[in-house]
Image (cartoon, rainbow, N blue to C red):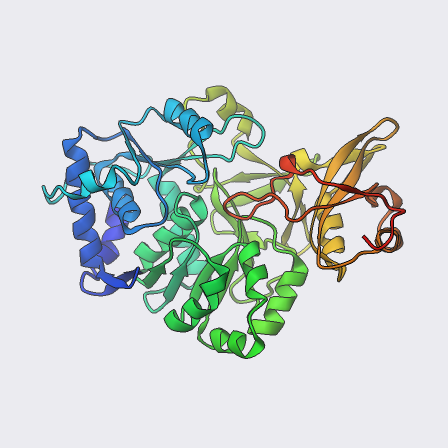
Length: 467
């Protein structure tokens, strides 16, 4: 079964039901179906056919949904491009994907002026590539992950079952559709469940509370940075939002345990943290019914097998795993070990099966022969009242090879010597940051994940008080 057949559960089966709210207008599932059919016709007349690549460089919009659905109906491979990317990054993707068509906001009016034919069908199976999503490329040129109809389908079916998403939900989506968090989870859960979705162009913390109160969603997918912003909500308003909500989900970056606890106290909801990747979509989730353990990404989803190597690296196997990297046979081969996908993430498994991520394998700091997981130190630093955010990275050291250093965003004045003393009291000596550096903000990508390779800032000597 392909995605088009699954989408028809809503596009045809709920044709008259309200599907989408976008910029003050509502659209039924029938409207969405008709628009995507017209878009499929427009793409077909431009010569796009099964296996061709369609690169799309657009912010969240109704037209982006039209293009994705049209690509699915034609068997065209959809290639979303991060709208924060600039010429060098875009040029790499265009050269690598070799699209038949590249759509930007300037191109949209020409596409949308055309109408019919109503629909162009292709015989597709579940192994057909549906999308080519490029990795962030922090360790070199980004690679295109080939995601199939099966990958997207099993991911959505799992989430609908495990998170109990139904047509009765009201879904608020403010994540960027060029990323698998919104595309793979958000768009597919909406279309398979038949729920009502309000799509925002972006998350704006100044208007977020008003949007929650107006739409009264039951379901929200967010990233940690969004939940940190929502902690600024007045208590009475937070409780009002919480009354309507059924489920808050967090992903794409680690959710600090203290944010989870503070959010629960304010909104009356325990955020459900889960774990996914571009190459795998969703792998694990805290349970909908059961313990949502702070700091943990929960249990493997149905059909997903997990194991931890002696090195601490987490490996996965299942129908959610991508088909390989586009035109990169060597990279694909290197990513697998006897059929297991090597995630590059370090993890621990509790006796009762919950997994906790310790950071990226490339982030692991080896100091004097001791392994240091930066996330452990970051979590401790963020428990301190003076510290709003923290990131720990390795610095070269002549004697120990590497030592941890901490970048911190401060809430106010800080006695660095006092902070160091607290670290020495609670952490092993080799885990104590060798120095602290104050920054106005941590560099993040579009989904809120800290880009540690970009960190730089003024050093705070540990002997300098009251910085």
